[in-house]
Length: 501
Image 1: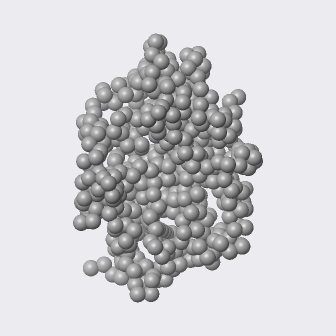
Image 2 (image 1 turned 60 degrees about the vertical axis):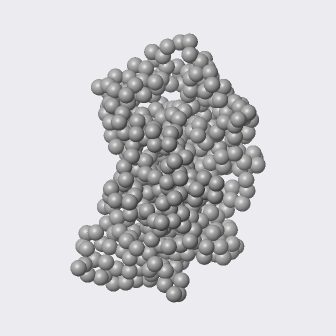
Image 3 (image 1 turned 45 degrees about the vertical axis):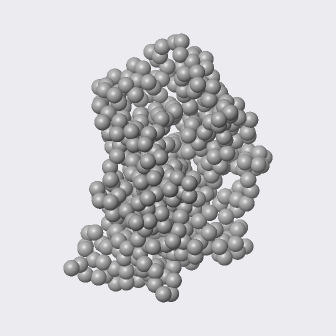
């Protein structure tokens, strides 16, 4: 039996060392510097799961090109409410990163953020009508006023030559373009944030340490059972507050905690694969993130896109992701993850969600059985002249789509990310997929308001937030003057641009 290491007491325990936990730890360090914080990560380094460059889209999700954020209504109009909210949340992240760059807590922005235009591209009469309606409604708002639309073949060839070379004429096609798009390396961001925190005397990061259980004692503290995966020791950490930012691994820990707010939650895992270009001559011909429209039944994470990426300083070109199914909740997880997360209270919601999403089931079966030839056919819808020898299949990240109770349906899939908090604010968990990393700063500020209300409402806390996030307390959606000034500062500090050259 493993030995028990010395127990300890701490103010805050963070489970998982990805970009979300790094963001929360950094915010708490600035807002409430007296807190003691311990972070536990079961892998050998930080940011190796969803935050790792190959395991996510790398897109600064601002709703510029992601068509699933603007659903079409029955009357043919487009609902842009979610796009405005996501764009505002991403602007909060940009302000936060700019603040950290200015104070020297992050390196030169070129290490983690690269300007890359965001494009949406569709073909076929119905899709063209949708994209035109989307652009009309979005560009009428100051947040998206620079969104351009074109159906001109010559201009589209300038925007995305690989996509247009060899494309047959005659089919209606159109694209939108936002110059102020970004590619982000969330792994670098997380590593740099944690590197800065390590200098603090009351901050500790433990790698190869797995949180195995969570229980609450009679005094309201969380008893966190942690196993040292290298040495084999086990210890108990007592914490006033616990945040579970473990990606797909969050759900099992929420269920173990026993908080009523986790009742009825389940999770459906979706894996991913990329086609990665190996030909430097092809890579240099594309400089954009081009998003298409998802297939019927496809989860949002599987929206096809041809993607310029900077991975550890090297330019790359990816297409996908292709979805798959596994019972793992993490890329480095166990095939028993999903079975172990089954409870009496979430069996019916999961079964009901499965019944009401048979198209998703059929889609995933098709993706799992897809041959290399079929994947190349999908790529050639974006790059007509793509050659098989220029592309290799690589494993992407693992996502867990949230399943929750629904009074009408019994259970439903909840796309996107969701913050689950205990009633007393002593525990919180972030579950789900995109756009979690891009909007982490706004989400974690909301969490701090929810879980540390007295401290954050104090004058010092409000002043600190205002200094870090100049738009704090205001609405960028409703205040175009503030939006303009915020973007001017962010563009200058992070090296971004608003308009086409």
